[in-house]
Length: 552
Image 1 (tube, rainbow, N blue to C red):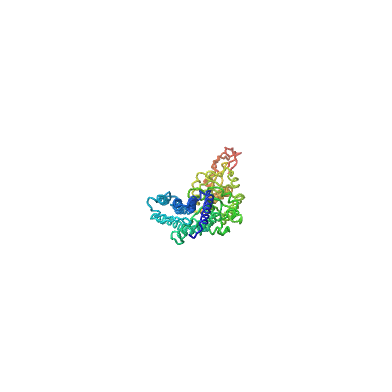
Image 2 (image 1 turned 90 degrees about the vertical axis):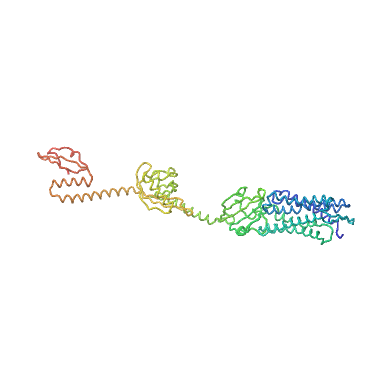
């Protein structure tokens, strides 16, 4: 045989040591998706390599046959554990979480039992031939069950390879690099085993375990550069690539494992790199907010550009077993909204200043039910209620009369439903001390996000004007009455009739007191009817002829 037995044994021992070393490293990552299945693969590789080395150093046929059968345990378990690892790593549902996935181990276990009991049926190994060498070798003739086992093993290997290849196109750049490493690492033992089974090499020994040594560098690079099994391998849809909002996915250690192009452009994330988020985004406030396992939402300004604001949603990501495995950061820029809010705030502040400093206008702001929300200083002067006393109470209950409440509430409802102001009008109100006053009032709506949010009422005290108008109206009525009285007087011919007509007209038109005076002149008594409000006290009694004045 053209091979160096000592070199092969040394490489197999080296492979066993490497398998143990990688297993120790991954042992601390048992909660990561696929970690336990990967440990199962390492165990199968260790059994296969160790038993192959022991077979090579064994001098007798019995010993070589024992170790050949023992190595079948690793050989039959490796393909299904590879497929189980693929299910878990890609979170391929429902197989990644179904208990039925463990049925994949049923046929391999049966195959191992068939190998152990081969002497009774010879279905696994048809014949075993021992060549004393040197070096001594054991050759086999495969049985029918052996080829069934080979077919099942290759089915598992190809299925896992197909799943990873399919997930490659919908994966993030980091996961694509991991997938490439996994596929390349698998190709070496796959091709080597195929060459052994097809007897292309004619080496007479299965070098498939040795091929795993060529896979080791790719596994090491994946473990330490691309944090293989440290992250959650999330299969993502292409829609993430065209999301308008920046998105960053970090693992439970705070390393960036995925991002979309918008995030890469906005935050200048280095392409195809696995770095801590704190190194990429100098954002202390963000990490203070994110220091929790709950979903968090916050509005923060970006320290690099303080005038830019983002609505940030931080969502915890769980692995297949429910354990926390990372966090998803979604950034929605709200700079324009914050600017609009600031402008609205400034406008509202100016409006509030106008309300507070308008000297002659009482201004109130209330809701749909008339509950007072704002009450300026002039309102305190007009109505007697302080802002503390008025706010929180209904305006209609505070100053309006019962007769005006229904009409006031109708106007509020009209403003709220139509978004239009009502025509200004006069209102009669009562103050805190019970005084009745008259107001000229205008009501109009305030809007927020296109809907009526509040109603503003502006009142001007017209009590003095109203009273002056009432006095003027009465005076005009009196003048009109005197004018008609004069015309009536001029149309009278007889003095007695004239006096009677004047008295009657004055009583009727001016609505004043109507009294009768008894006056005496000589021995004759003259009864004169006169309209004389207010009467002097001496006219209201009978007078003597000498002292009686002629009162008119």
